[in-house]
Image (cartoon, rainbow, N blue to C red; front, side, top):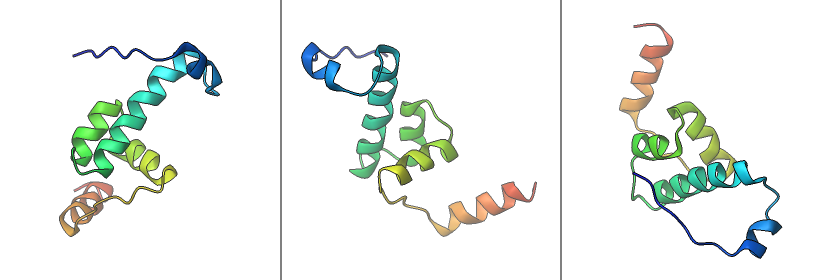
Length: 84
């Protein structure tokens, strides 16, 4: 699915991002905000951002957004890291 946003050109020019970077940044930013509000799970938000779980967690940390990390997820991550 694709969504088109109408944005003010002057405001966009003020962003420290090039034309190709703007769209990508907005995609990640929206996913982070929707995750922070509890509207999306980590997996859903990571998919929306087009990132794997680890890369998305890095984006959350850069924005000081706490990750809802359960014991089950920690156990699964440890098992995955051990190759089990």
